[in-house]
Image 1 (cartoon, rainbow, N blue to C red):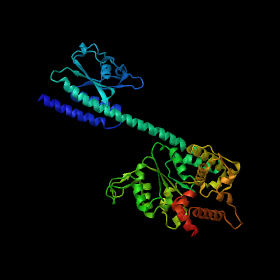
Image 2: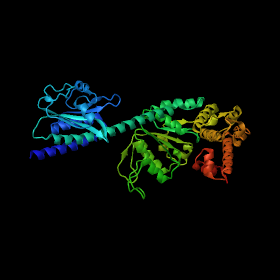
Image 3: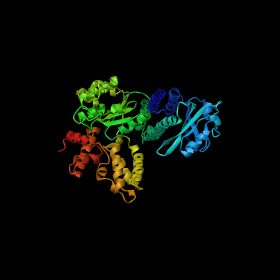
Image 4: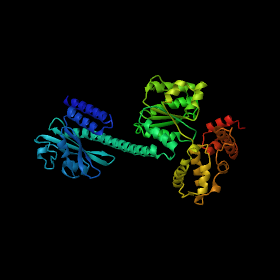
Length: 500
């Protein structure tokens, strides 16, 4: 009867210890709770986990139940020293039936005033032939309990502890790597690191610094290629949410059904092909920031669902009924005239006001030409490193690039510099290597007083698109890549300008 009772107690203790060690990543707390379970359920007192310090090679008590902080601090051993050190050295368990008669027992912690009639059991913590430390317990000597049974239980628990230590180590390494990456991202995308010397962009940076510390939604306005996603990342990494996710999605890149699934996720069986549950971008961005690029391209039905998320911070996955709550900061961007779209009924006015809490207008590159030289210098350094070259730029070539109006903005400038670096084998970019369309249309000049700046810009943009289409044998995808814009944008502009 006593044997059966003991077996049940062992199984119960093993189950509870296993659940405790897998309950969280708080390793020290879990180990302490596990030692308490051994004391409460199996009369194994002063449960102690002693681990090898990889830096010093010394053994130190990591956790002990029934010892004071002072006693734990004294628990230090060299490998081979005392019973604990001997178990690490040999990799074999040791059982001391009576501590009072064992000269190897050092009582380094000074926790045991009376040692007679106390047994000491010590087993190595081993994972894949690597000894991590030892697990030891005290036990009042009891002839009714076989020591080999106690050892068997302790060896199982030592294995569970070893697995928990390994998992925690992997978790800590991953957490530290994420912290390093997050620090690098914060440095890379911090607002002071945005390449700009112009007053207009400095004003943008000042506004971003102010709004980043708030919870307000931001609407970035500006032409394609002006760097709206870069600004969105900078706002995120300057905010209190910088350690949480930054999730971006281009709303114009997906059809309506796919966009809805991407934004809000779906449940298994929601539609044909939905073989499992998928988290949406809003769930992935929880506690962080979501960047909704090309917000002016979403349908009215998705606008309604997006409005609910902004108002109530809840939504349901496709095919689901459970409301999911999220805490997400929204940064949206568009190059569309949302005010005109609101008038035409193509964009919800209530959604417009929800998004347009803090509007930030990013100037086109032609409006801040003083930023062109530092941007060129930045791109030259980056592509020289990437392609293992050392290319410089001739002053005449730089002037040609300065005189150009850059309808594709910073993205077009970036693509142009990359192309010039890739094709250059002389070490210097000369003016003759500058693309002809840049040299032929250096400036966007007003031809007569009745010509508006917008009309001139559109004329130049149309000419650039036609030239790119001709170069690419009228392949719209290739022409879009050449111009540094999306296929959807070039399709829209072809239709807008009536290009045949």
